[in-house]
Image 1: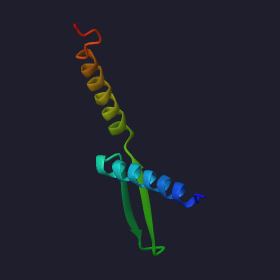
Image 2: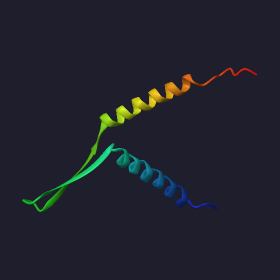
Image 3: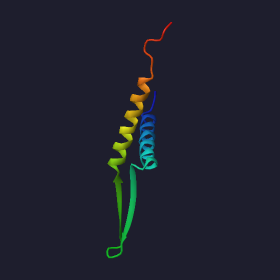
Length: 76
């Protein structure tokens, strides 16, 4: 019998990879700012939607360009 822990570990690994990729590409930015009056630290997670949209548009253009070069009817 297989345990369910393996599936959970795999899902957790996929989530970590996606979040890591987001930080690597600059889609996600984590900032912190101390608040001396309350002795707390404010932490913000910023999602750069403009960067995501620009990269998606660039990827779409690359796929279109690559698909134009595909010969669907090769001569025999």
